[in-house]
Image 1: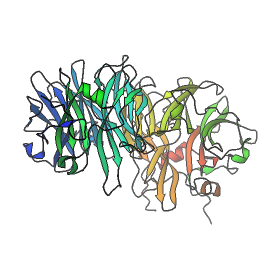
Image 2 (image 1 turned 45 degrees about the vertical axis):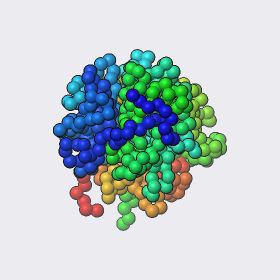
Image 3 (image 1 turned 180 degrees about the horizontal axis):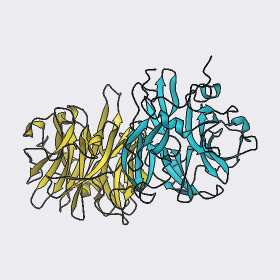
Length: 312
Length: 310
């Protein structure tokens, strides 16, 4: 059962078992594990994890759980940067931040391919969560945090992403007839001067369809002194129009989770709470999986009603 | 004896072709001309920075003396339609014209609240123009369409905001784009060490596609923009057949050295003229339009790694 009493200063409740997965839970040597995307199977919850190896580049491993809280990580990574073919040049520096979306029963993974020309968004699919088939590189360089919507909107696939224009990182939407060619890009959510998300924003969690619209759990960044204290990554929420998701219906003034605990403050990149996925149960309970300080995977919970009622 | 021309491109002796003194209205500067052969004339689509700071694309037509007259009303100005408004609020610029399947397509840059995006328009008569949409996310610049399909798909070259390199992107319908790949990168230590971007539309030659591009090298006094060339494979344009390791044109004359952005030669148009020469139209110092000429052969001969040490 989820404790829904007001707790601390955040809307989300941290799981008392946090951090849920650290590098010590991996059966192989690595630098860190963070930013995991969940998928619910018939009898389990899987998390596709971003692992940063000792060499410095990232790849994906699979963790399995029966309760969505306690995970065991597979013996070997499930997806490594491509070494040959047309993806290789663009994955030279690793693959990062996977986001799973199920569309019509097919499990798609959007992830960031990192090459020497910068990050780009790539798309793969899997039928067993262990083998991944690459489909296409779907953005130009300088783009990350790509997430597919869980269904077509007015006959087209849609994705959120985060290009950077004029040095400002905003959330955009693009559409596609075939998941390969993309267009009709529009800006959706931009940084807000003076707010907690005044430096950069990016999509975090696969949009959740509600009666009110698409609930998007995103990350917002405030830059303190660059190079000294660095950025603070917090988790925020917005609701997008169901038929035209470029329209923001509501956007919360406040984050729903901010780095406060030691495991969020201390790590390779301190002061980071970075959600990469959520599971909504039939009873309305929401588990949000987030990377903490680029060093561990944590879990925070709430109910969908509470997020929609008290989060704004 | 002094060598008269250091460059592969020969400047027209009456340069600049168009300066703001030739424009019949007040403006800040004029630069970057898309060029197209249309009904026995070479028409230019120039970028004018108005006194307000906003940029518009104007049509320029040739006069009897070889100079050009810029039309008063913009050929393409910032659109106030809802789809475009916030993306063109700071202006439109750098038109590159490609003749493709019986129409003239114009890829230009929209500059708005969220940075640079590529946009596409088309015309058949250079009187009316149809906007076809914004075709990239930010911060992509220097986009140009190939003059024919490649393996059945439309293709464009461009410079995405990240990486400072030239990329290629494909489309079946000019609306949805994908399959982006890296084509060429800046070269450390060379004249094109820091940023490169495509110039005029690719020119089909026996060896493949001849592509003129600009390369920038940063100095303590700011960047120097020069013009180079690369030959790409006809069917697989990410395969480089040859690339000049020297520029074909560098800023040397006062009109290329002095202006709003000094030390810039920036090509956006190239037309094979009635004598078989390649006329290259370039913006100089972001302050005037110039023209230089050379032959395709001379550029192609230089699209190899020169073995000369200096």
